[in-house]
Length: 428
Image (cartoon, rainbow, N blue to C red):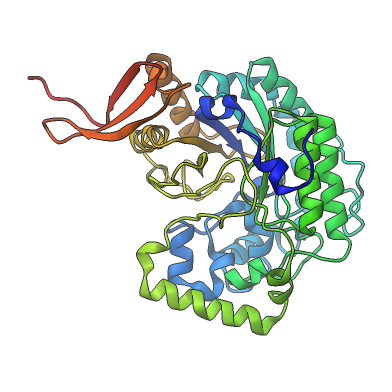
């Protein structure tokens, strides 16, 4: 039995299945999939570099739509006015529920299995606070802010029927149903974690999710609203309930920094420092690497190409385009070529990482063809080359090169070394 202290939690070895799996599927799907809109023009880092004072409403993440339409003179606000008039974000709940008649969780699970994934992480509550399961924990700020159909349970059953692990994503640090102020800057974003009755609400919901679905992955986002002791107790109870479960690194708990960031003067000072850093060192602001926390099983660099995370287990996460949620603005050129996704995946495995590749379905559950094509190609490649990926560990020298100068990545399984060339080898 694990105790609620760092010594006990730190004695735990990361379950072997997670390191051996290498490839997982992330799913961003919810009310934001109905409008399916975010500005185009680059990745999340570009938004901060080009327009920091409005970065949070200009990011390419469609799942941040509710916040983006609160700010006037933004592409999202203009799109919303043109297509939905003055309808509130809550109005998307009905069309989303109506579209569920087309959703087939078994079909999703078969697709993910055929793609070679070994686990699936479903977003069950994103920043808009809308829950994809019939929670018994009531949201007093938006009553009925959840589906009556148990989407989480249905997908969990379908995924496990395919022999895959099932995990959940929960937005612990942001919930716009509790905090409805528009967020513009990184300081606003970090400082917006709700207080009041939200910490008890979030804690009760995550405990409900653990008891009901026993997720193999507990993937929190942004931060965590309770104090440190409550967080450690949650980890201990989760491990005791799900002995082979894992938690990610996005759990900075509520503390002095959180309290200070609630003051506008502190947020503006923080924003000034970040803007200065971006101006001086723009190349260092590429993707997201969460800060180190006292306890986690793995780290989660986001949209970071070829991260080097040391000996700590890690999992790179990204969408196939610039957004996680479905974006109607995505053109074929906005999708990362399969060859690039594959090369980054191989590089990550050779350096001790997993890939959590996102799927962003439309509101009715249909997955865009550009995403289907890439999943199919992953499956084809892994069926031929999976022995060099699954269950491997990094070699002491994971990087090599052919005589022609092509990069090579090295993995090891027992006494067998696998050399994977990242390119086309010419005939001798």
